[in-house]
Image 1 (cartoon, rainbow, N blue to C red):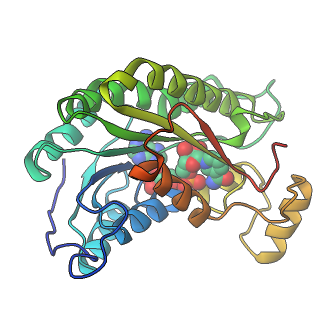
Image 2: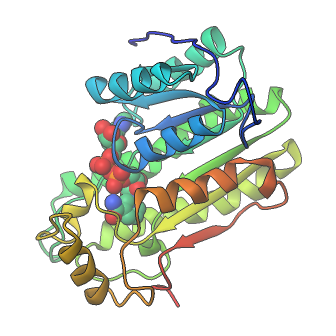
Image 3: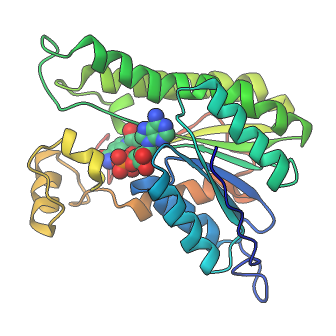
Length: 273
Ligand SMILES: NC(=O)c1ccc[n+]([C@@H]2O[C@H](COP(=O)([O-])OP(=O)(O)OC[C@H]3O[C@@H](n4cnc5c(N)ncnc54)[C@H](O)[C@@H]3O)[C@@H](O)[C@H]2O)c1
């Protein structure tokens, strides 16, 4: 476990209270892409941030950037498929964040290049189920006990619109996300009495490194965004931004959604209608 605690106080400490003021958030895969956007958005709203990512350089860079802006932030080098690494995350929460965890975002995820289901390797099948699904299994056993001790928490799992409206050529990625959405509902049912809310955010295509698996020619230019939106038949005419996902996760993490649990929140410009 690598760590380096930064405690410069909260960005909102001197003035207006943020929507997550006083809360501690753990964000897996917070070193880049959607996870980075969520980390930055939560920090803007006053949360303390612990990033868990297996890319140490990326996790460190985001944690240090947040600290330089006044957020209490830290990182743990963790592979979310490993129970031992989840125990390290819990240990860090206990040692550096007052044994308090209010928000867990299971965001780290993986895919493989879109292709016929006749050719997907067994290794790629195992990888998507391990990173996308087994990670949540471990998170429950490592982190939920802390939330139960603290009388509740908000869990946000980054699923996908592919869980609800799957298309071919990414069959096992899609089905791993369906498992995420289904398990989230069951967990919401099982732990509601403990004050734990479990919800999913379901984006359509988001221009990140991972997205090149879904649309190989996706180069992140505005022209490609429009083309992809047409290809995917998105009524609002654009793809999802990392900020769209972060803003939805923010609402699900905040007390504004205190009566919402077990939902798949679509962030897809109407693609799934
Ligand atoms: N990009 C999209 O189009 C899209 C659409 C729908 C859902 N999602 C989901 O959003 C989530 C984030 O995806 P993204 O597009 O930001 O991906 P990304 O590849 O840009 O970033 C993923 C981050 O997770 C980390 N990570 C990956 N595997 C890990 C592991 N085993 N242990 C710890 N950290 C790990 C990476 O180091 C990286 O920082 C994923 O769950 C993905 O399935 C993405």
